[in-house]
Length: 224
Image 1 (cartoon, rainbow, N blue to C red):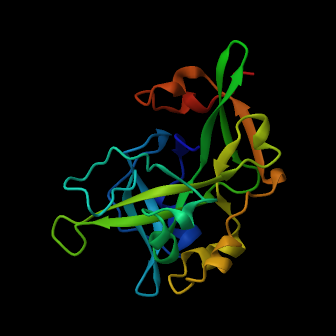
Image 2: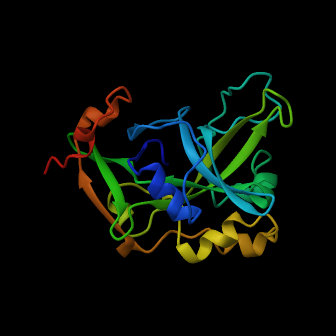
């Protein structure tokens, strides 16, 4: 499960990380310290052979929905069953993307309740999380883009906090994941693995993160 994250990178950092150039053609954004489903996020995909960064809605909206909303649980897609899913099986073959996150939040069950943690990469300011995207009303004036984050079983580091985690790509695997010409399920499955445990670090944070309306730098401050 990945139901909350944070994005504190700048547009310049994002542009140089994924495009090798600046600027981005995005509306001006503020840091999002408490990124929640149905909000917009920068997403990287390949269009006409070139990488593009666009804002997309976090909760994949199926093309058949009459309105741009759904009651389906589509903020995450389980990587273990994505090829068997009626909703996701074609998207994972043709419409893959990267969701750039500064980190994500997860809640650890303790005897006295759930304790939130902020998890990030030790050596990189931005993590490349595997996603799949969809276009609603494709080709029309009302076209809108949305995405799901792929999750996987927890590695040994994350398993002490939660049994699931987002699927974090290595730099070496980013090109293959974004390549719309890569459509062989076996090759794609090779990319669907938890990242190494030594990539990650975590700290316990305040329960203020539980409410999406709380969105400020204090969210990320360690409590112990």
